[in-house]
Amino acid sequence: MELADPIDFAGRAVIVTGGTKGIGAVIAETFLAAGAEVMVCGRTAPATLPASGGRSAAFHATDVRDPTAAAGLVAATAERFGRLDVLVNNAGGSPDADAATVSPRFVEKVVALNLLAPFYVAQAANLVMREQPEGGAVINIGSISAHDPQPGTAAYSAAKAGLLGLTRALALEWAPRVRVNHITAGLVRTAGATALYGDDGGAAVAGIVPMGRLAVPADVAHACLWLAGPHAAYINGADLAVHGGGEIPARDLARRAIRPPFSSP
Image (cartoon, rainbow, N blue to C red; front, top):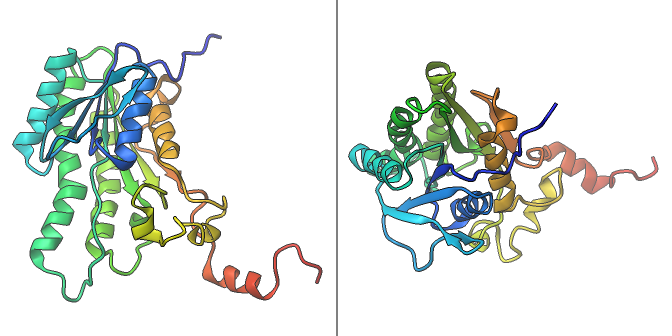
Protein backbone atom coordinates (compact mmCIF):
# COMPACT_ATOMS: atom_id res chain seq x y z
CA MET A 1 0.00 0.00 0.00
CA GLU A 2 1.26 3.45 -0.92
CA LEU A 3 0.60 6.38 1.39
CA ALA A 4 -0.03 9.84 0.01
CA ASP A 5 2.26 12.58 1.27
CA PRO A 6 0.30 14.26 4.11
CA ILE A 7 2.16 17.53 3.78
CA ASP A 8 2.32 17.99 0.02
CA PHE A 9 -0.10 20.76 -0.89
CA ALA A 10 1.58 21.81 -4.14
CA GLY A 11 -0.99 23.00 -6.65
CA ARG A 12 -3.65 23.53 -4.00
CA ALA A 13 -5.20 26.81 -2.84
CA VAL A 14 -6.00 27.77 0.76
CA ILE A 15 -7.84 30.64 2.43
CA VAL A 16 -6.96 31.52 6.04
CA THR A 17 -9.26 34.15 7.52
CA GLY A 18 -7.56 36.34 10.10
CA GLY A 19 -4.33 35.03 8.61
CA THR A 20 -2.24 38.16 8.96
CA LYS A 21 -1.23 37.70 12.59
CA GLY A 22 -1.15 35.33 15.53
CA ILE A 23 -2.34 31.77 15.03
CA GLY A 24 -3.70 32.57 11.57
CA ALA A 25 -0.34 33.80 10.28
CA VAL A 26 1.37 30.60 11.42
CA ILE A 27 -1.36 28.50 9.79
CA ALA A 28 -0.77 30.43 6.56
CA GLU A 29 3.01 29.97 6.80
CA THR A 30 2.57 26.24 7.42
CA PHE A 31 0.46 25.75 4.30
CA LEU A 32 2.95 27.83 2.30
CA ALA A 33 5.76 25.60 3.58
CA ALA A 34 3.74 22.60 2.38
CA GLY A 35 3.59 24.05 -1.13
CA ALA A 36 0.11 25.58 -1.16
CA GLU A 37 -0.94 28.93 -2.55
CA VAL A 38 -2.44 30.90 0.31
CA MET A 39 -4.82 33.83 0.54
CA VAL A 40 -5.14 35.65 3.86
CA CYS A 41 -7.56 38.38 4.75
CA GLY A 42 -8.20 41.11 7.26
CA ARG A 43 -9.82 44.50 7.36
CA THR A 44 -6.48 46.25 6.77
CA ALA A 45 -3.30 45.13 5.05
CA PRO A 46 -0.45 44.13 7.41
CA ALA A 47 3.07 45.53 7.22
CA THR A 48 4.34 42.09 6.23
CA LEU A 49 2.53 39.03 4.92
CA PRO A 50 3.05 35.43 6.07
CA ALA A 51 5.85 33.84 4.06
CA SER A 52 7.83 30.62 3.78
CA GLY A 53 10.47 29.35 1.39
CA GLY A 54 10.64 32.60 -0.49
CA ARG A 55 6.89 32.67 -1.18
CA SER A 56 4.34 34.96 0.45
CA ALA A 57 0.63 34.74 1.00
CA ALA A 58 -1.67 36.95 -1.06
CA PHE A 59 -3.91 39.41 0.75
CA HIS A 60 -7.51 40.48 0.19
CA ALA A 61 -9.03 43.20 2.37
CA THR A 62 -12.20 41.69 3.82
CA ASP A 63 -14.60 42.17 6.68
CA VAL A 64 -15.75 38.56 6.93
CA ARG A 65 -18.80 39.63 8.94
CA ASP A 66 -20.23 41.04 5.70
CA PRO A 67 -21.64 38.20 3.55
CA THR A 68 -21.00 40.13 0.34
CA ALA A 69 -17.38 40.73 1.33
CA ALA A 70 -16.99 37.08 2.34
CA ALA A 71 -18.21 35.95 -1.07
CA GLY A 72 -15.82 38.44 -2.67
CA LEU A 73 -12.90 36.91 -0.78
CA VAL A 74 -13.70 33.46 -2.12
CA ALA A 75 -14.23 34.76 -5.66
CA ALA A 76 -10.92 36.63 -5.60
CA THR A 77 -9.10 33.52 -4.39
CA ALA A 78 -10.63 31.24 -7.01
CA GLU A 79 -9.86 33.78 -9.72
CA ARG A 80 -6.25 34.23 -8.62
CA PHE A 81 -5.39 30.56 -8.08
CA GLY A 82 -7.90 28.88 -10.35
CA ARG A 83 -9.34 26.78 -7.52
CA LEU A 84 -10.02 26.59 -3.78
CA ASP A 85 -9.17 23.45 -1.83
CA VAL A 86 -9.07 24.47 1.83
CA LEU A 87 -10.78 27.11 3.94
CA VAL A 88 -9.53 27.72 7.48
CA ASN A 89 -12.04 29.86 9.36
CA ASN A 90 -9.61 31.27 11.90
CA ALA A 91 -10.80 34.87 12.40
CA GLY A 92 -12.40 35.31 15.80
CA GLY A 93 -11.90 36.35 19.40
CA SER A 94 -13.38 38.69 21.97
CA PRO A 95 -12.30 40.76 24.96
CA ASP A 96 -13.76 39.72 28.30
CA ALA A 97 -17.04 41.40 29.20
CA ASP A 98 -19.49 41.28 32.10
CA ALA A 99 -22.61 39.50 30.87
CA ALA A 100 -24.78 41.52 33.26
CA THR A 101 -23.87 44.86 31.69
CA VAL A 102 -22.54 44.14 28.21
CA SER A 103 -24.28 46.04 25.42
CA PRO A 104 -26.40 44.39 22.73
CA ARG A 105 -24.06 45.87 20.12
CA PHE A 106 -21.07 44.11 21.70
CA VAL A 107 -22.91 40.78 21.71
CA GLU A 108 -23.91 41.22 18.07
CA LYS A 109 -20.31 41.93 17.03
CA VAL A 110 -18.94 38.92 18.90
CA VAL A 111 -21.52 36.54 17.44
CA ALA A 112 -21.04 38.01 13.97
CA LEU A 113 -17.28 37.47 14.02
CA ASN A 114 -17.18 34.06 15.69
CA LEU A 115 -20.27 32.38 14.22
CA LEU A 116 -21.88 34.25 11.32
CA ALA A 117 -18.63 35.08 9.51
CA PRO A 118 -17.45 31.45 9.33
CA PHE A 119 -20.88 30.53 7.96
CA TYR A 120 -20.73 33.23 5.28
CA VAL A 121 -17.23 32.32 4.07
CA ALA A 122 -17.97 28.59 4.18
CA GLN A 123 -21.14 29.06 2.10
CA ALA A 124 -19.19 30.81 -0.63
CA ALA A 125 -16.31 28.32 -0.43
CA ASN A 126 -18.67 25.37 -0.76
CA LEU A 127 -20.01 26.70 -4.05
CA VAL A 128 -16.49 26.52 -5.50
CA MET A 129 -15.33 23.31 -3.83
CA ARG A 130 -18.35 21.21 -4.74
CA GLU A 131 -17.71 21.80 -8.46
CA GLN A 132 -14.15 20.46 -8.24
CA PRO A 133 -13.48 16.74 -8.77
CA GLU A 134 -11.34 16.73 -5.61
CA GLY A 135 -13.89 18.66 -3.57
CA GLY A 136 -12.45 20.55 -0.61
CA ALA A 137 -12.12 20.89 3.13
CA VAL A 138 -13.38 23.50 5.60
CA ILE A 139 -11.72 23.76 9.02
CA ASN A 140 -13.32 25.88 11.72
CA ILE A 141 -11.03 27.05 14.51
CA GLY A 142 -13.03 26.87 17.70
CA SER A 143 -12.25 27.25 21.37
CA ILE A 144 -12.28 25.26 24.56
CA SER A 145 -14.74 27.94 25.72
CA ALA A 146 -17.41 26.14 23.68
CA HIS A 147 -17.09 23.20 26.07
CA ASP A 148 -15.94 24.94 29.26
CA PRO A 149 -16.99 28.61 29.46
CA GLN A 150 -15.07 30.98 31.71
CA PRO A 151 -16.34 34.17 33.44
CA GLY A 152 -16.44 37.12 31.07
CA THR A 153 -16.94 35.04 27.94
CA ALA A 154 -20.70 34.53 27.69
CA ALA A 155 -21.20 35.85 24.15
CA TYR A 156 -17.93 34.34 22.92
CA SER A 157 -18.62 30.94 24.46
CA ALA A 158 -22.13 30.87 23.02
CA ALA A 159 -20.84 31.80 19.56
CA LYS A 160 -18.10 29.16 19.68
CA ALA A 161 -20.59 26.53 20.82
CA GLY A 162 -22.67 27.55 17.81
CA LEU A 163 -19.64 27.16 15.56
CA LEU A 164 -19.22 23.57 16.72
CA GLY A 165 -22.89 22.90 15.97
CA LEU A 166 -22.55 24.60 12.59
CA THR A 167 -19.58 22.37 11.76
CA ARG A 168 -21.56 19.22 12.40
CA ALA A 169 -24.56 20.48 10.44
CA LEU A 170 -22.51 21.47 7.39
CA ALA A 171 -20.62 18.18 7.53
CA LEU A 172 -23.93 16.37 7.15
CA GLU A 173 -25.13 18.54 4.27
CA TRP A 174 -21.99 18.99 2.19
CA ALA A 175 -20.37 15.55 2.29
CA PRO A 176 -18.98 13.71 0.46
CA ARG A 177 -17.57 16.40 -1.83
CA VAL A 178 -16.77 18.91 0.94
CA ARG A 179 -15.58 17.84 4.38
CA VAL A 180 -16.15 20.17 7.35
CA ASN A 181 -14.26 19.75 10.62
CA HIS A 182 -13.60 21.67 13.83
CA ILE A 183 -10.56 22.24 16.01
CA THR A 184 -11.05 22.95 19.70
CA ALA A 185 -8.05 25.10 20.54
CA GLY A 186 -7.02 25.48 24.15
CA LEU A 187 -4.69 28.06 25.68
CA VAL A 188 -2.25 29.21 22.99
CA ARG A 189 0.93 31.19 23.62
CA THR A 190 1.02 34.00 21.07
CA ALA A 191 2.61 37.46 20.93
CA GLY A 192 -0.30 38.70 23.03
CA ALA A 193 0.18 36.08 25.75
CA THR A 194 1.31 38.67 28.31
CA ALA A 195 -2.03 40.47 28.15
CA LEU A 196 -3.91 37.20 28.40
CA TYR A 197 -1.86 35.14 30.83
CA GLY A 198 0.48 37.52 32.67
CA ASP A 199 4.07 38.69 32.46
CA ASP A 200 5.45 35.14 32.50
CA GLY A 201 3.92 34.44 29.08
CA GLY A 202 1.67 31.76 30.49
CA ALA A 203 4.21 29.77 32.50
CA ALA A 204 2.04 29.80 35.63
CA VAL A 205 -1.11 28.94 33.70
CA ALA A 206 0.66 26.02 32.04
CA GLY A 207 0.56 24.20 35.34
CA ILE A 208 -3.14 23.46 34.88
CA VAL A 209 -2.60 21.82 31.47
CA PRO A 210 -1.85 18.07 31.57
CA MET A 211 0.86 18.47 28.89
CA GLY A 212 2.63 20.99 31.12
CA ARG A 213 2.71 23.82 28.60
CA LEU A 214 0.48 26.11 26.61
CA ALA A 215 -0.01 25.33 22.95
CA VAL A 216 2.00 27.24 20.39
CA PRO A 217 0.43 28.37 17.10
CA ALA A 218 2.26 25.61 15.23
CA ASP A 219 0.31 22.99 17.21
CA VAL A 220 -2.93 24.34 15.73
CA ALA A 221 -1.37 24.78 12.27
CA HIS A 222 -0.16 21.18 12.14
CA ALA A 223 -3.64 19.97 13.07
CA CYS A 224 -5.05 22.02 10.17
CA LEU A 225 -2.52 20.49 7.80
CA TRP A 226 -3.58 16.98 8.83
CA LEU A 227 -7.32 17.66 8.62
CA ALA A 228 -6.92 19.17 5.15
CA GLY A 229 -4.70 16.38 3.88
CA PRO A 230 -5.19 12.94 2.33
CA HIS A 231 -4.75 11.02 5.59
CA ALA A 232 -7.95 12.65 6.90
CA ALA A 233 -10.00 11.85 3.79
CA TYR A 234 -12.68 10.08 5.84
CA ILE A 235 -12.71 12.61 8.70
CA ASN A 236 -15.88 14.70 8.54
CA GLY A 237 -17.86 16.47 11.25
CA ALA A 238 -15.08 15.84 13.77
CA ASP A 239 -14.01 17.98 16.71
CA LEU A 240 -10.23 17.64 17.07
CA ALA A 241 -9.04 18.71 20.52
CA VAL A 242 -5.77 20.66 20.44
CA HIS A 243 -5.66 21.64 24.09
CA GLY A 244 -3.04 19.44 25.74
CA GLY A 245 -5.66 17.39 27.55
CA GLY A 246 -7.80 20.29 28.76
CA GLU A 247 -7.43 21.64 32.30
CA ILE A 248 -6.64 19.73 35.47
CA PRO A 249 -9.69 19.96 37.80
CA ALA A 250 -9.38 22.43 40.67
CA ARG A 251 -9.93 19.70 43.25
CA ASP A 252 -6.92 17.80 41.89
CA LEU A 253 -4.76 20.93 41.91
CA ALA A 254 -5.74 21.47 45.56
CA ARG A 255 -4.86 17.86 46.36
CA ARG A 256 -1.47 18.21 44.68
CA ALA A 257 -0.78 21.35 46.68
CA ILE A 258 -1.33 19.36 49.87
CA ARG A 259 0.47 16.21 48.69
CA PRO A 260 2.61 16.44 45.52
CA PRO A 261 1.98 13.67 42.96
CA PHE A 262 4.05 10.50 43.30
CA SER A 263 4.93 11.31 46.90
CA SER A 264 5.01 8.52 49.46
CA PRO A 265 1.75 8.04 51.39
